[in-house]
Amino acid sequence: MLSKQDQSRELQKRQEKERQEAQNRQMDHLAQLVVDTRNATIQEERRRAQERAQRQNRR
Image (cartoon, rainbow, N blue to C red; front, side, top):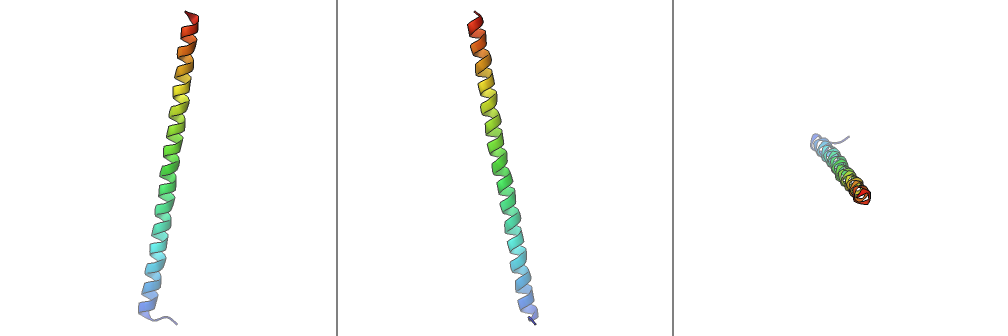
């Protein structure tokens, strides 16, 4: 049986671990958003470049 102090310490440790894991998930999510946004931007730039090239070829 753990003393009240030990129980409190265990609870604090567990809560800190959960907080850290939640923060890590949030950071992973943000990193994925950055990657997705960058990829979408690259795709859009390629599409615009293709359109420009097609317009140049029509002249």
